[in-house]
Amino acid sequence: MDVNNILSIIISILGSSVITLVLSVLIFNPLQEKRQYIFNEKKRVYDSIIIFAQIVLYPEEAKYSLGVISYNIQELSDEENIKNAMNDLKMAIPKLYLITKNNKVIENTQEFIKNVDEESFNRLLEELRKDLYK
Image (cartoon, rainbow, N blue to C red):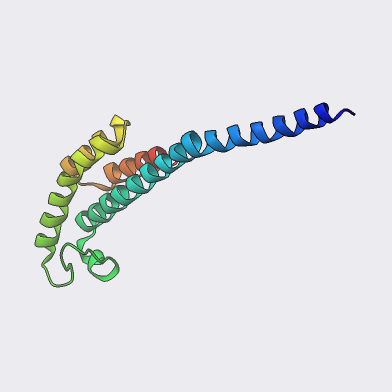
């Protein structure tokens, strides 16, 4: 083999490595970070929606199993806890418009707020799961 051929091979290997590195740093990593951020934000909001819905459906049980930073559910009456949780659910709807493109998530959340029953809660959970892990 000629020295020019060897240099040519080395330059092409280094060149492709540099291009791959540049593409990775400028394009692929930011896209991955954006996807991870969106997933984490959805998970945080969806978790809070589930907790507040559980407080509304099961206020007595929630006192012994859930903790909410916004207010101490063990010290408040069931009616106050339900009222606070419903307010928090209603306040989560604008966040849903920002973080999801799936209108069924918003519709099911609004349906649960309207009906407050286990059937609408189960539909909401299923839609949240689908949207988060699609």
